[in-house]
Image (tube, rainbow, N blue to C red; front, side, top):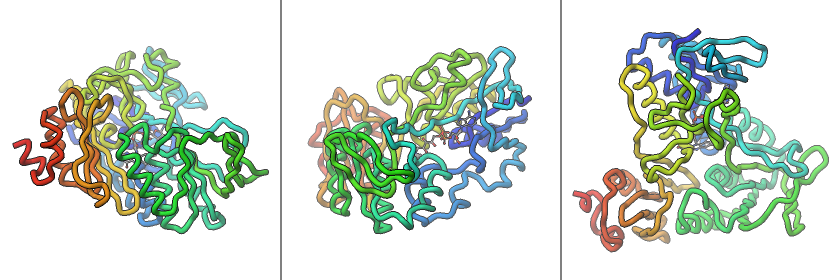
Length: 405
Ligand code: FAD
């Protein structure tokens, strides 16, 4: 039995334990995680860890000794299969049970997989865990061309790394632009052009019919019959939140588990945080959503740790996110969900610019490419929901700080 039991040893689970001890919480705390590694940062998995530029030790969230020093029990390599909210226990597949006073569900999600023929072939990969990326790296020597299915952040970051390694890369995207789910059209077209300039073959509006090959994948057959030869396929088409055990236990939810502003699920003494938590985000006008970012994972964890230690704290933090591709550093602040207007600040051709998103005249988000100043200074505009004319926002002779002063 633990006073606080955290299920999931990723970004949010690790941060919840860290924040509890920082808040001088003296009760017993454990993290159960189904990966064997201690908590590590996931963003480098499609960036510098994949590229071989950062060793695994450098992406650990804390050095291995940290957890024992803080009396945080690490039950790694173990998977929770069910939750009993009445007895306040979780169970592993072998039937062993662990009791809890408060449960923090921090399980993230598992990558969506293709369902078509050939999707089980060797050489077909997803990018979520260290083990996924190690498996890809282990096979790359024999690979000349990689087909990436899905033009989201993970697919595009992987494409950039693979081009640097000298691989041929084809990106297959079902929609008519890359990053369609997360970015406005300008940003999508900018990244599309950058990848093309770096030699990536980007195919938009294509469907995947099947993957071909005997044991090992050797190609992707598209809806129009064309077969694209590839010795490796990377599938980056989003995640399915890992919430089955909670929903089976009666928690409200569907695409994720529903939480209130304090990250509480509908079950007593059970919180949910990070990628799996569907919440009304105050920076998206209260739209119910899951946010898949380190910021969201950490800030939800911090809010829950405060609530557990006696200061009931709502989750209300400015969203931010980043992505690195080639020499481009994209930094975003706010959520552009539901924007009705936008301004481009600076010149995309100069590879340094921002897109500012507006809703009902208020600044709600910025996507900044090699424009850290706008990103840093734009945060205040998003927080305040500042109102400026498009001309004012586009005028690069005035910094955003001067504008908001
Ligand atoms: P996770 O970090 O996924 O942790 C969940 C953990 O719980 C996992 O270890 C999982 O295996 C485990 N688990 C699941 N079910 C169970 C169970 N039943 N029992 C025990 N353990 C379980 N975000 C950014 O902000 N910037 C980026 O640049 C960025 N890049 C990314 C690149 C990649 C390749 C990926 C995969 C993600 C990236 N993200 C990025 C997103 C970010 O990593 C996630 O939002 C963040 O990891 C979410 O934290 P989490 O704790 O909710 O889930």
